[in-house]
Image (cartoon, rainbow, N blue to C red; front, side, top):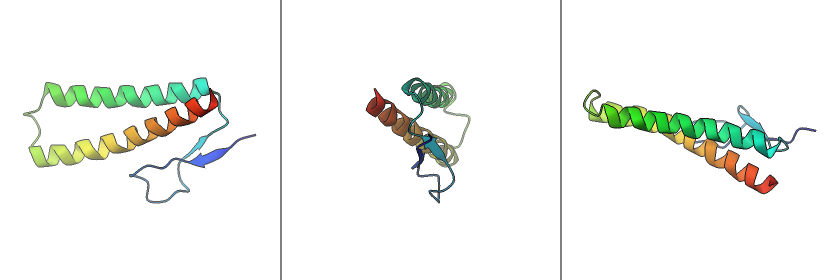
Length: 85
């Protein structure tokens, strides 16, 4: 039986849109969290490789809007996986 819990992120204005199945196997939660962390690392690497290609203010806004939701989702997935381990 599914145990759907809303994903609490700063990018989601409503708590009835994105859900995670808290009863999913820990392996699935870890894999999903790892994928999000890899995406976060890729974004950071891109920023480190070409800091002069984006204007600072616009670049910061884009970076924040991309990083905050991924970091929050990854943190929640890890917490769920740890509680199931």
